[in-house]
Image 1 (cartoon, rainbow, N blue to C red):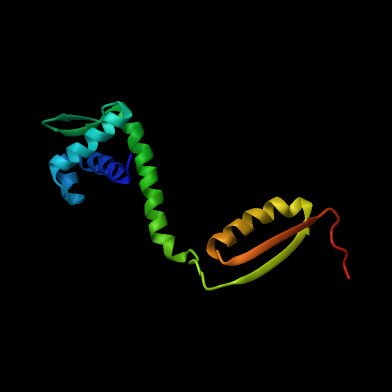
Image 2: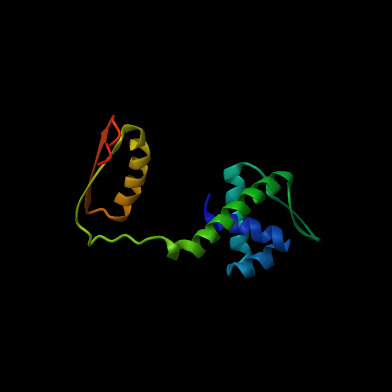
Length: 136
């Protein structure tokens, strides 16, 4: 399954026409039929019924349409917000040493894994201990 196929399902369902969906997605009707045919083969089900009145989702197609719509909405949302994600900065080098209570270690590991993703050249070490730090 490819994202292109999910866009095709949603667009055909919205327009009720292979031709209109193909135009909106900047492809040919033949390619649109091929895309849907491949997806139908992969899912081993018919997604649309075709008639002189248009193209309509089958009951199985409606289920797949709902999932496709959700995936596309999430994908579009990600595309809108991708610029807000921090970029990887491979120019930062050095060491980061942290210490925490054993009960916090699992939480810290999750955070540090994310930090490591964005700063691959940063050497990170985490030390955990059983006793909480004593205030000075």
